[in-house]
Length: 184
Figure 1 (cartoon, helix red, strand yellow):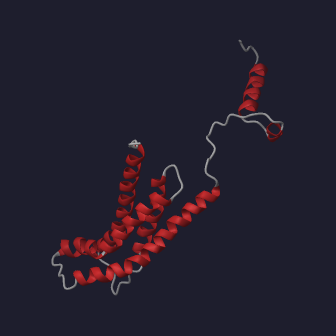
Figure 2 (cartoon, rainbow, N blue to C red):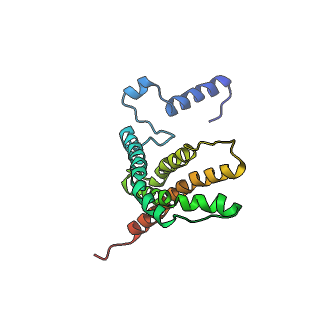
Figure 3 (cartoon, rainbow, N blue to C red):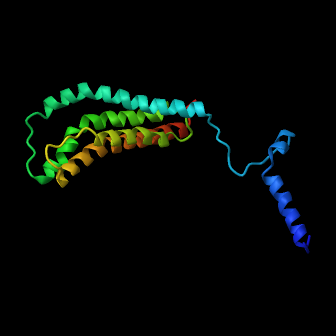
């Protein structure tokens, strides 16, 4: 088919456009449409449910960490951190181990509870909550120096990273357990 006039070209463009992007009237008439983009399979209720699961796991983990931190505090009591590296890097890691352990458990729980084809994406929500709220709650008597901010950043990001790592380990374990054939 050779198009000789611009009018024929314009008519062909309109015909192709109507086929690919039907109007509401054409959709109501029962015409089947092949969409260029895949429609979302999950309804919005599942998304809200997943958000509530992630937020609830974060909230529950913050309650669980209190008794664990009390016991861990008894173990690390009277530990002296000398030097800049120990005081700025090692100390926030040691102080935030209970939160990091519970955060890893929250990451595993998200993988197991979220109803999604890609549950690892949902682990980012509680990890972002750990990172965001980890930066809050610091009050300085003097303007903070660089080592104070390093302490704060490591303390905030350590639980977030362990949450993601717990989710990655759980998704790999979950993926291998699904791929392994049953002995039946």
